[in-house]
Image (cartoon, rainbow, N blue to C red; front, top):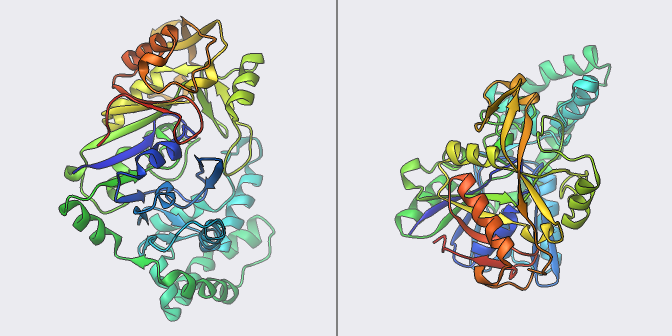
Length: 427
């Protein structure tokens, strides 16, 4: 049975939660392998809407084991709050597993994140201020705090003191902020230890054994390909690797065990935060996409920037992730347009290119080259098969598939769990 990676093929917010939830009934494990509570997934089950930030979407599927892998950064207060919220709504959270090697977001990480972003002013990156970047920086600098450190007070104190030696100098002397007490940080973190301990496990061992036993394991990325710290629109990116390669390092499962890589594509394009966005709209069409699509960040509540579908980005995502399939979401949002522009190339300094420029300056100056496809006015939310779609909607999907370089195997025609057209099975 397969091990699957499911990830965002644009700038995030493509509807990964819906896709994961759709597969949840056929999957034994769903694994978050990177990011933290700066990501957000909305899942609609019946008349119930769930906003998940840190927890894998599979936690809503009975029989599925949700896993937070070693590549995730965990804010313990957010984790426990999210678990409590689901438990109050009758969701069983007892199967959750958390890697002991995952790094912890501490109070000083969030403080540094917000302070630094304010200090940057017009040069700010557009972070969520939740401490994600500083936590990953500490991980790379080898002064990070891991989940397993919660269970050894002596080691925890040593590590927090070591981390704060430098950070307090920065806060006090550069930002004119009060120094943070190591003792207070340790006491707060220790307060979470007993509540979290029952979830902590050697997830790398468990996942590899599960795959060897022919269990189905789904690796769920947060954010999207264009926010990858290595392959995204740097520096306007996240601090981890949402691309397919990150699934391996963020879970401890080798690449030879991955059998399928599914990219989630919105039928148009959105992005949150600063950075270049060639197809961004500043007119009534952009406002209509935002209003009809409900384009507001699940985690931040910020308005998402909206634009037309960008085939250049989709092809790039296919290449860097080795995508085998696409799940196209929110096709219903485009109902009502007489014709729909699709970006097929960029014009940069008078030259046309169909590939994403590797040069940051070129991408900043890229102008979209559009082709126009006929739209449709029929309601498609009740469509159950591809043939049920209006001819122009079918043609739109086929055009996007051809431009993007991988087959579209499922189509979202509404927000609900059952509002999906399955063309090819993912499993």
